[in-house]
Image 1 (cartoon, helix red, strand yellow):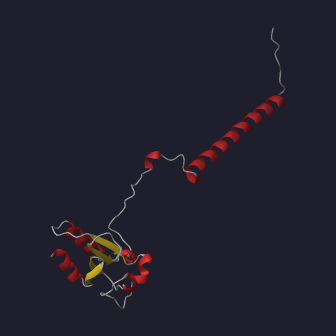
Image 2 (cartoon, helix red, strand yellow; image 1 turned 90 degrees about the vertical axis):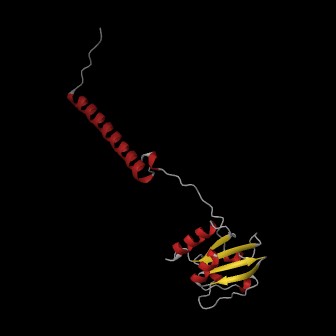
Image 3 (cartoon, rainbow, N blue to C red; image 1 turned 180 degrees about the horizontal axis):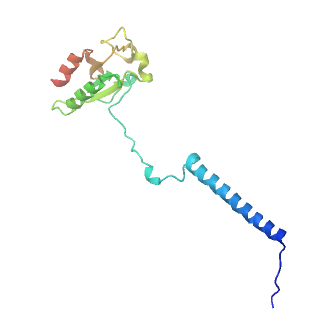
Length: 166
């Protein structure tokens, strides 16, 4: 026959306190785990929120420092500020030009790109530059190259529009 073990009231209170302490510690550890997962590592958020964007390379972009060295015999370089209010007009003009029958390759260079700052001079331009060391651009400019030489240099929007719509 099994012996019945009698615990005193103090011992049973100690066991209750021990179990309650274990439950409280487990709850605190669980709460810390959940808070860390939500706010620090963000592991517990839904994975549906993750969106991936495919990297796009724009092969029509160039730096002003490279405009004499592009691998084409006949091409244009449109230099303008991509963040300017008029940039949408210029983008539309370029887009329409690309669909025309007499399309010649056109590259774009951003005036506000820090790598282009050495070629920007708000007071002077040099439409007769024969190499990159001589190039100076004031503002929005369309430069036409043939055989690595400048054959046309347009700084006025109306002239640029006329050149690209002829």
